[in-house]
Length: 344
Image (cartoon, rainbow, N blue to C red):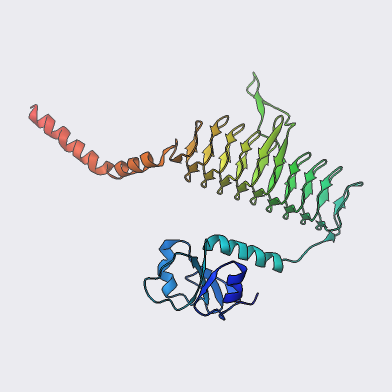
């Protein structure tokens, strides 16, 4: 995509400061950008790069004030990061090949209606009574079980497995290798020490605008539904157990594990490798730091770290003392010896 800085500014409702005729043909990070690239400055710790970058143009905040001369064109916008995201999505949509039709070999059960703009890749399997919305993309080696429902503009990347009866809403994206609707982990202990499998007869529901990362697994409910609500974004390698509910616009980084029947509220930000015990609740607008273990229910608007989870402030205090443990141990040893010598 070839565009001038002025044209780009008009596209994103920004203002140009510098050479509006500078030509942009590519995108790059501010520390790596070369001539012809557009980059952005959103994090203050990267500010020093704006004075050395070779980029032809840089997206900056409206209130950005340079501390010394800048040798590149600035495009001032309200939010550089959000603006860049919109631009990259726009360019990506333009560049992506629009796939349509049914490739062979693949299997589509008799009676399944495929809209004209649907794409079914080679070696895909579409079961009985599957309902498929408009502009759905089913990439090669996807398995879709009987009675599955796919909304409009759904994309299932290669190797995705959607088990029978599950429902996926509009504009959902499921990355390669994810499994939607595998059996929940339900086993009844027997007197002889063995375990009898409990049939998992529920489903999984992904509401609109959900994205599921590669190799993430979302288990079907024992009864009822495991529900991922509108706008949730799940990273790669996440385990969501049976009957879990994740609230609107919650985001989770890789390797989070959520045990069965836990309810997570809306607009939570959850770091990588966080573990949730089963049958607990997490409120709304919480921030859970990486590798936190959450054994009990949590309210709203909290910041937690550690295992077991405690407030981020208390965690920071504890870390200070942990670093001083060798010194404190030496002091205790000296005091103990002093007391012993005094008592002789």
